[in-house]
Length: 130
Image (tube, rainbow, N blue to C red; front, side, top):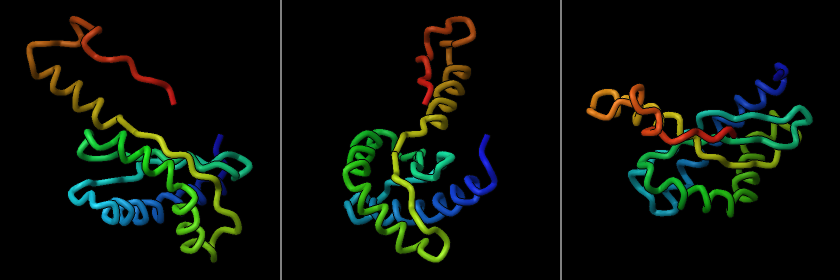
């Protein structure tokens, strides 16, 4: 179970990371790409922050995720500059794609179309536990 401290730190990280990641996308020349931080989970020892991001359009998600993982130390540095009055240590950042919106979209389009996943469950790919 998450403590109040973990929740507060996750909230601070989520807000600041959203702004930093939008700037990273703009600097990379990915105008028209929307990055949102859907959730941040912080471990109980506050050493690791799992950052779940949603990227639109979806076709650029893997490429952008790879780039984010490569520049994670720079993102952590930017984050530490922004949160220096709130956090003593910034956790290591691990980035993951949150595909829940895309998954919901596929379910809705399947239900509206002829292919009904209720009749044929194999139409929807199995979700991975993260």
